Image 1 (cartoon, one colour):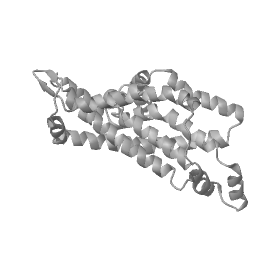
Image 2 (cartoon, helix red, strand yellow):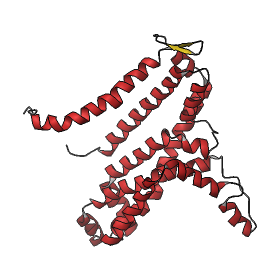
Image 3 (cartoon, helix red, strand yellow):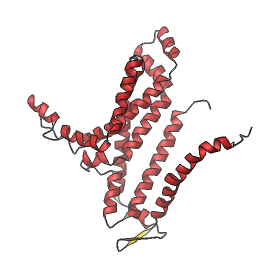
Length: 281
């Protein structure tokens, strides 16, 4: 049967539609148009020329940055998911209702402060004379170079996405049918086996969506790679800023941005399809 569109439903859907048109569709259309503009004498001129696409896609540095960004985001997504799951599992199944509320509150607190401030605070810990190396020096170890490394970048990615991933995983675990877990235990299924064969499959949708959010946040992050990783290796977000500083090449930066958006859309659709695979509609 054909669904009737009601005025009541349209009234509540209209603000969201307007928001998407103003702040997503129009900027995206402008970004596409900008990628075909040309720059002459440090001034952008409206045009329809594919030179920006050919130039960026023909550069080795672009594909190196693309591969680095993709690899770092994927690694951050996997690492964040693996570290967040025990925390989310403990909060969902081991804590009392009161303790669970406090745990959720503590997960939300990091969002009260600026992400940039949290990243800067890690420099105090990771520098050669930082807290970690000082403690290691007490036992005769170090100093170990940690700042301006891939390790520091990954720590920044964890700082950005870990609380959110824990919350998303927690919400997914909270809606698992507890009778399935009890049935597994009645069938003499061990705790570890129950987690892998009952809990994780039942919460697959939420776990995949949480990992997807971690990937999206890490893929487009600029703060951690530049302030903790030292800008080496170069990521796409860093390449955008370098491109805009080089002769005001905003059209070429638009090419990089559109490539990032396209990649995220492909990954998002693939992840959502996998998350809901086998689910009844």
